[in-house]
Length: 485
Image: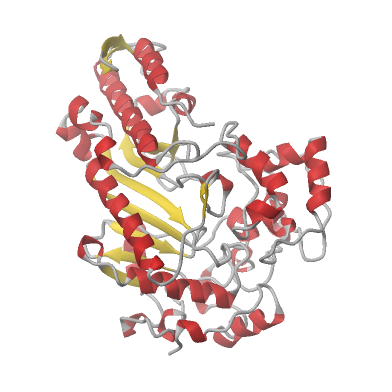
């Protein structure tokens, strides 16, 4: 077994890095990827993702020019179509960040993917912490557009994880049966964290990613109390068994298929990179090495390692015990930071952009507080998603952003990340989810169609009582917190 300090480092996409990868995975591919479709496996080796079938043809190593973006509809393309954007690209196209990242690496996923049928994507990822500095002329306006005009240069992002400031609307406005399977199935708080000194997933090398996994896992395995748990490498990953931090020999080649299926069926484990957005970004390279999940003994706290972000920290459980979930979430993020700092590592953080993560959409808190909620009547309304958007919420299907709802069940969460604190975002979620459930209950009693413009609904907002849906919605929107900008 190898100590972390003895592991070599090579630049990503270079010959030495390729040799290091192929020395572990003969033929340049893990056997785990053998059953995947060809368009996916093209992004799971060591090379740049080039796939004619999916239109992923941009090669940033050989082409520095910007392709035609007339058919693109993304936040990055909106900016690059402007005179200011075109000039900014010309200034940056030959630059290399101090860590060795180019603007073309950051833009490949956007160049390859003109748009998305379900959401307006950013189309831009960071390959390193310094990407946000070297390519500021692109990242700032795109981030501002994605976060509704947030001033990346002047605004200061604040963090607040004090659970005592959480709204009590779940407990005071809803019945216990509403929150325990009646309407709310599961609730979770999730965020991401990145470690300074390591590149982000789109630009990290095989050897550096292994070092990163080792540092993260060593810290996680030192946690105690309700956070104590085990690290489970993905099936086929050979990195864990090669390190001196391996606690369980049975995982030298990762989890079993059954263990992975169990975690995924409970929506606790990420999938292989089956999206061209991820594959073009470089986040699928060297799959599944060295990736995995840390799970505590109660299976209500998880850390995803080396997926789209270096770390995804999740606190979840059945029902809607949001204070308990958020408190565990707050304690967990602090504990992870403390354990990693003991290893000499700190988190990437910026006073204006908050916690630094791969996609600009997750800058700030990186927080997604959400619930899997069954509201078939409300979600049958044609304005369901647009109404949620005005409430600073978003709805995803039962299988994630690309999926549809099953039986009126939706994953409803806060839409914003940047310019609000964690507590503010969680309260936006709590108040919004409470409103949606009360509206669903009102529609169950309503004699008319669920799609009616207005209907009777009783709710108290900011000390005032309302008796109709439209008046209540207006009051709810007016009571929403304002973002720092």
